Length: 282
Image (cartoon, rainbow, N blue to C red; front, side, top):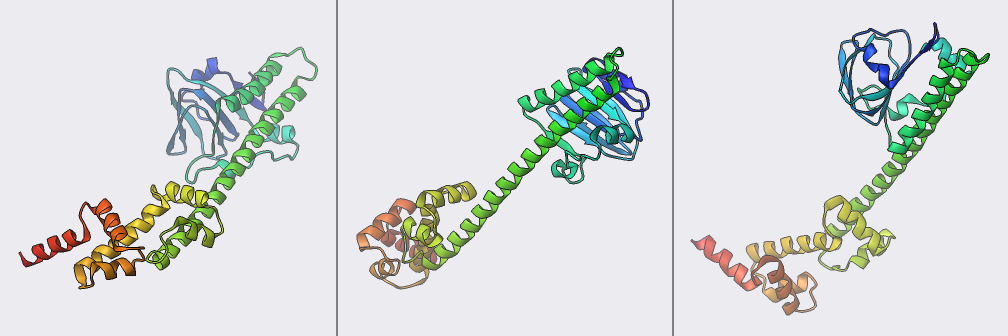
């Protein structure tokens, strides 16, 4: 279905007719709800999967190479005159906002988002088929405009969601770096998570969530690992007594340190030191 020299709309049942036909000097939108398509753009090959809207803003020739047997897709080919007339200067979608670097612009869609875009194209198809309507061209421009506006709305929401996620991620990275710096500075004297959370001006729960998300372990495990590393190093390389090591690592009593060390190494500090000494002399 088409308006000559303006726009061509290819319904899902006619997509196979596009195979091996070069397309150029127009904008190409491909909306794939099921299956997939292989498209040649210039000398490059692009695979388009399901639940994707592709906006091929390119000057090189486009050729549809192949489709999967279960392909369900729409293709809109408006020339730049029809696009400009329909949008009348409006720029509802910023292609760069969903453009993956080194890739053609692709917008990944949820099922309900796909249904919305398909409805607009169905209305466009109905208008293209209604030759008796005096305002056929104007209606086609209206429904193409509505499709573009809906796509633009989705782009902006996804872009904002991505920016929000990046802000959260950047904030989490900052918290993690600050937490690790504090641990390296205070792990000997401060074993309680609340101390670090207070220094970072966040709740202990939030700190635990960030560290768990980023490192896959709890803040306490980070502190514990530093304590164990220091304890084993002192047991291996120094002649300090177990009591002195316990005191330097700020355990309330030797028994607490011994219990902590054995829990996480399987040996008491005394047994660990004896075992290491025996290995050295052997």
